Amino acid sequence: MQAELVVIGAGPAGLAASLAASARGARVVLIDAATETGGQFYRQPAAGLGAGRPEALHHQWRTWERLRDGLAASAVRVLTDHHVWCVERASGGFTVHALLGPEQEQPAETHARAVLLATGGYEHVLPFPGWTLPGVVTAGGAQAMLKGQLVVPGHRAVVAGTGPLLLPVATGLAAAGVEVAALVESTGPGRLARHARALTGKLPEGAGHAARLLRHRVPVLTRHTVVRAHGDTRLTGVTVAALDTAGRVRPGTERQVPCDTLAVGHGMLPHTDLAEGLGCGLDGLAVAVDAEQRTDVPGVWAAGESTGIGGAALALAEGHIAGCSAAAHLRGTVPGPAPAAFKARTKLRSSAAALDAAYAPPAHWPEQVTDDTVVCRCEEVTAGAVRDALDLGAGDERTVKLLTRAGMGWCQGRMCQTAVAGLTGCPPAPSRRSFARPVPLGVLARHHTQEELS
Image (cartoon, rainbow, N blue to C red; front, side, top):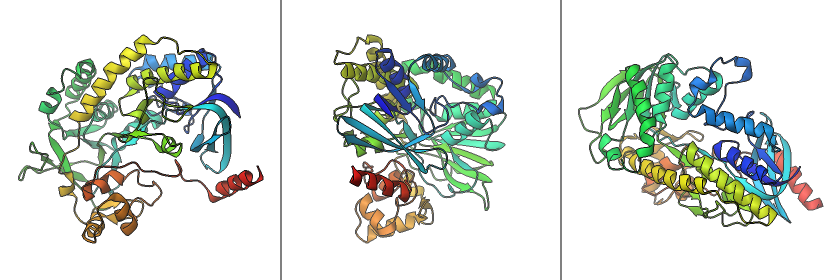
């Protein structure tokens, strides 16, 4: 398939970028791995479930309706169920390689003059004793079950970790009839107060969640953490404890909370696999972009969570700017003025930076990870094995990986990389994965044969 611009990712950033570029005359193909557009933020219940009021599950529903209706009325070609595993630079542009459908075995290619990466982010979860028990899910996973399948993960839940995602997860579960036994947030109110000025725009949303928590009588434990999950064949409860100002567990504050579900998360991390494969530069763990959302690789733009975690509103602003810029590049013109989007982006980036600083995981979380705690779930590598590797002289993630196989499994370190880094005392580093997802050997063989023939 041929296009002028391929947008990868149909969440807020990808939708805004596609609409902006198409409105300015670019031939756009929008690709996403899901069966429907909307991404994680605008995830919809399957049509067959017959949801009567899907808007009750969503924040900013009217914005989604405008995006959905705008996409339907546009000339954007939408390709769902396309799992992109690689983007190659080719003569005159780029080739996007994808795998089709749930089996992900049939290859597909799309050729374009330019690429816009709106690949989003993924959840960050730090290990603790018992975190592999059935009944322990990520906070975003619990939300996805509710939004996408109209099901709840259990009857009595604890929502724990840190970050703004915990609030809508707790209120959503409570509204769906789940007894939320506690919202356990490791950040204290004082830390948020220090960033109050930058977070002014978030106050109405936060106040709304707080009112719903109060209405559902959800206990909120700030500056607390889950130190252990209990159960034999599945989760039966958790132990929570208070944290001191340095982020250490305060002795004698432990208490057990019975529950059959623990929804836990410690923020989000940017998806940068495709950008790294193209050779795009990074700013920390995010894709580096300029004022027009251009990467340092000509013909490649990036927007949304892949350029830094900031939420849906920021992703919409960045996507609009990127789409305008990409269309102008393809047409050989100057990007049209988008002062509102630039102004919104500046304000929202300030709020995102404040949230990131306020909602940092407890500094001393590795002290609570026992040696028998599984850190790398794919390869079943324990914290004790990681610490043994340090005793053998390993001083970074790569050496630990070579000695223990941590990060060599199906997820390629997406779940355990930051945990291994924390246990080694090293800051998280870019992953440098060759492919964005596992690829069948037959697909790679056919691709290699085609390259040889060409």
